[in-house]
Length: 378
Image 1 (cartoon, rainbow, N blue to C red):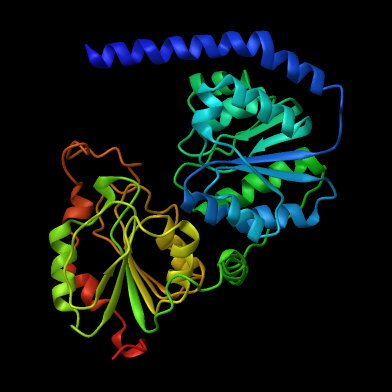
Image 2 (cartoon, rainbow, N blue to C red):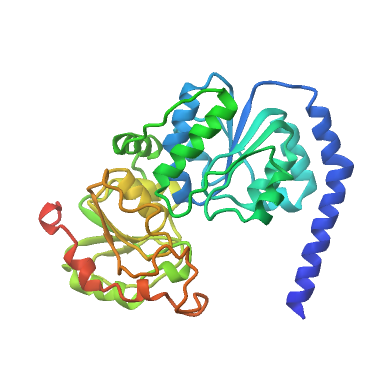
């Protein structure tokens, strides 16, 4: 009964929001349209990993276009873009969705854009809603991943007048981004610009967003990333503890993430849910090694040139790995015929149990992958 009431309340709020948009926000948008200019708005309020792998492409796109570009992103990611010398504005998705006054003043502040583009391979309804309301001549998005269905294409064509259909399913993120940015470039700049983003460019890009050391100034330590965006993508607590039991007692270990996972080791520093994103980036960039689940900050580790051991399930395998340019990355997997399932597991209900591709990864395999002879640690 409570769930039904919440659902009805949420629907009523959205209906009221639509009415306010018709009466006030849309009138503002029509007024703003008269002040036409050549500005471009790029929108990305996605997850940290998706943002990081796209960042060098944004930097390249901005470097060769002659048009004024503004980035709209979430408050926690704004620093990433400003540190990359990208003009960025922030949006609180929840406030934009449910607070018409917030929505009105943000649209008024941003003004009119010649083009608005969602050019990442991971779209969301929230980003589309923002794109729908901010006034512009061209509204561009890509089909992304997973592939659009005919119904979804119809829905998106109501918002966007330029839809980039990449027709890529489980294709490496680099190939996907090359395709998306080249097609978007053609739409916006009328060029046939070719994107050549190398491993070295990624490393420089990650350096540009890494802050100075202020929070954690220790030396000779490793980082364990026990968290992930979904519970079923995380290695079990018992296996993490078994791994720590196998590591030398004098080895300094820093635990990062948002979700708490109590572990024990003589030299463990638990910083889960304590650091800011900027502090976490700094800690990782000064570590000797990172061992972690497949999640955003683990991607940052190898993209920035750090030795990284990534514990990876099969849901998105092939999208990021293998990545030959990063020899500093060791991926621990339990290869199965059902890989590339997009986390639609045929064996278990992921709300209850972890998939077998994660369950069957052993702590011994992780331990044996640690390059002890290459570390500064004793």
